Image 1 (spheres, helix red, strand yellow):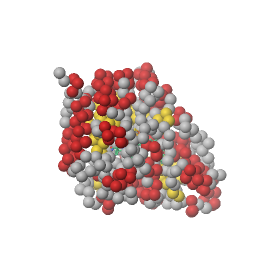
Image 2 (cartoon, helix red, strand yellow):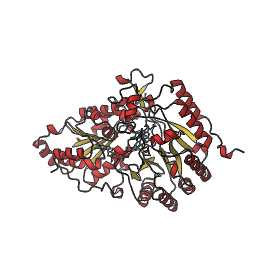
Image 3 (tube, protein in one colour):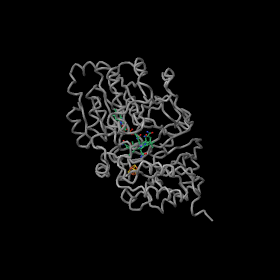
Length: 494
Ligand code: B12
Ligand code: SF4
């Protein structure tokens, strides 16, 4: 049997920190009692978001849905609770909560309720909300769920942890004694803080690697049917049948990222960069399209267009060849450097509707410091190709980082001007400091907030590392500047 001690060694060797408050309480009786049941019943939970603002940009808890498939593949029975569910029938009995407004493409608002700010955020002059279902309907939802053998909770943004803690506290009331395993990005990025969550196990890193030995230890559950983490084609499709609202499906063609930008934590999250076969990705898209009638897909890749000849180009050719009438959305920044006339045309023809690119800054020094993803020349070339392919300026969204440590407001202003002059549409991406990223120490030094000990201050709404020149008023003006109608690119002026 894989013991807890070996398990700790495995995690240590991979540099992922692990906390376990539960194993001390495990008794042989508990293990025996659990052994009586051959089918393990596992409850999976997507927790609430607590934040100043939140908007659903084609968001689905993809990691947890992948884990659901793997657990099913190994004989577990799954119950699913999504605290963000915009269509939960119980919410009809909550007349004071406005129904979420949804867009047919799959984005939209969540139900929301104003709640008191956590003490560290008291001085921030903004309202704070819980997004998703109300806790009032939570106990009722749970009555239809048989007592699980184990509960698994996912996490995303580090600064969303209050919603997570609340979820775990409710679970502990409804199902006392059932072990709760917490995983996901927050746990990987803030393992020490996650130990305060009330979960019995905090498991960083990809669940498919670390869950099987834990479930073996905890429940004597064997998971012989596991994917090869080096071969993404061996993964089953995520369990989308568990999701009530099937208006869009997120797709991952790869895990990890071949780049290393200074402000990003990708290298800590998904391991080494690896890709699926483009034909298998097209098969998955066709599967959801024909099985569930899905027309809208969002890509969650860190670097969808990297090595385009090996993934994006053959994938889009295949989508076009199969005549799939679908639309794609890329709220996560794409790589401008990869855009050729051929790729731009394929994206347009295959149905790429929401396109956002990571540009970050027009300042060449900043470009170099942050990772050298794209130069100004490459950027204007890429925009030219996209416009020739049929995209209008308004369609070509370009992220500009705002609030980096030591970044003067003038640099952001100049970047907005530059993006508009080239014929694209600027979007501000407010910087969120991420533990473990190369920029972290600089962020800690620049921030007036204790970002090392309090993840609430990673919230990009606070612009937690902004330089003194980026005042409230200046930020407001910059935001307005991004909203002006787009300009004709200089090259097209007669
Ligand atoms: C898709 C995505 C988005 C989407 C959708 C998010 C949304 N809320 O609507 C969009 C583009 C909108 C977005 C926006 C932003 N994002 Co974002 N995003 C991602 C991204 C690329 C992918 C997440 C994902 O689904 N991955 C794929 C699945 C398979 O992985 P997973 O969920 O992590 O699951 C695996 C493990 O975590 C684990 N696991 C998961 N659950 C569980 C549960 C248990 C029990 C166990 C054991 C294991 C486990 O196993 C799973 C399978 O391997 C991540 C980067 C990344 N690589 O994770 C950034 C990331 C989460 N985003 C980040 C940031 C900075 C942002 C923005 C602030 C950017 C900005 N400046 O505007 C905004 C904030 C928006 C907001 N308030 O919602 C940061 C995190 C910041 C933080 N402090 O936490 C990340 C990590 C990227 C980075 N730069 O490093 N984002
Ligand atoms: S910002 Fe994007 S390109 Fe840069 S390392 Fe992160 S995921 Fe990769």
